[in-house]
Structures are given as structure tokens and as C-alpha cells.
Figure (tube, rainbow, N blue to C red):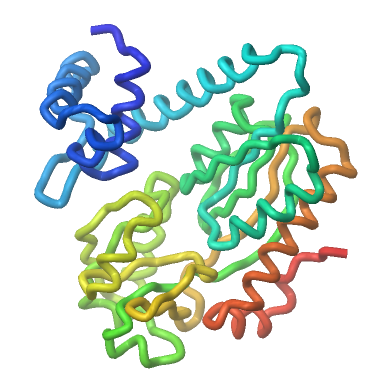
Length: 318
């Protein structure tokens, strides 16, 4: 069977929704049709692409590689189509970003420093995918957040600058959980909790979680794997906890708390194609991203205290 664009879209839809039935609804086709299509793809590729169970569908190791390549091919096709739409027009900047709670403020800032550019934005939780999209010329610039123990290489033609050298990873838990009444949570106190797999597992976030828990003498019980941003209902209902970006928004039923000793930290960088941006435009974009992130961090009721206590990590926005 020759793979077609619809097969690639199906792969990505299943991975994004975590369910064959939800993927079918997203694509506007029947669940049996998706199931048959997936089976044919697996037969053609020669291996199982998704683990199917009562909790949904999650990619196998082969499936993760297939989904990653599918995303790259689809991004290239979208770029190809956009270039043909109006070949005489100035190319629109293609910007990527990690999943940030302050993304709206980032867009506000970018519209001020890149007026009339018509830039596009792709939010992608995977550091590896963002780096590859940059490297394959599917993005012109990206805001990337990578864990301290991550080693994601950028190609030689990609420049980068650190925005925040160290930011903590917090934990989200149900407001009804007794631990939510503490100002911070010790990782060891979560040994009996059920976990949601952290986003970007293929980047090493899952390995980092397991290693951090191992140092505290336990193995995390990871029961759920969900698309980025869809874990809130499970957390609010008390079914699980999850590592989250510190600026994540809490709710009446969900609390965000720092972890004692910051066992998990990350860094934020701005990466761009040298030939796509001038030095002055990169400086303007850097200031816009830095100001958006700093303002959001300082205003956050749970991140603000940590942010103010660590001025050494604040970006220079002047």
C-alpha cells in the first residue's frame, strides 16, 4: 500500500487525540474506517504503530518515529502549498513555540515587533519536533523549552539565544488533595500518586521524571498518556498528577505547586534561521518574548514568588 496524505493525517490525529474514536470525529470519518486504515498502514509498514487499550491509543516506538516523520512531511506540504498560493508575495514568518501558558501575550508582543508580517504560529510540545522543523526549513524561528538534561542539537545554520537560563517544573494536582494545602510539595510525597505522562516524552521528559523519582526511592505509576493540554479534567477529578509548566493556570479544582528543591528544571531559548531575520529584528523578537514571559511569571500567584526570589534567571529586556 502506498502511503498518502490522508494516512499521515490519520497518524497525527490518533497521536494528538489519544483515541481512535476521537481521531475519527476530528477527521469527520467513521471509527471503523480509521481502524481499517490503521491496520493497513501497520501491515504496510510492518509493525504495530499504536498500543490500543481501554484508556485510548498511544504510539509504540515505531509509531513515535512514524508520527514524527508524518508531521514533518505534512509541514512541508503546507509550506509548499503556501508558497504556490502567491509566489510574488513576501514569505510570512513561520514561528513555532513550546506549549506556554503565556502564548497569547507572546503573540501580542510579536504583532507589535513584526507588524503586517502575517506570521503564522505553530504550538508544538515536542522540543525534538521544533528543532527538526527548524532544521528542515519548515519554521523560521522558534521559542523552545528543553529540560536541563536534554541534549537536542540544532543545525549549524540555526542561531540561538537563551531567554531564561533556568525555569522550574511544577506539579498540578487536585485542589481536594491534602498536598495542595502546602506551599510546596516534596517529590517523595507523590510516591503513591497516579501520574499522567509528561508532554514531550520522546524528548526525554519521561526519562527525567523516572530518574527524579528514582532518586527519591520510588517508581512513578504512570497510567495516563494524553495530548498536551488535555489533562486538566483528570487532574481536577483527583485521578492523577502531572508535571507542568510553572506558569500553568490553576482552577477551583486544580492546584499548581512548586516542588521542593526544584528537582526538574528547564531552559528557554530563541532559535532562528540566520538568513531569515536581521539582528535588529531578532533583538525585537527576543524582547517581545522575554517581556511576555516575565510579565506572566511575575503575575502568576503560584509562579510569582519563585520568579521574584530568583532574579538571576530574569532575561534582560532593555
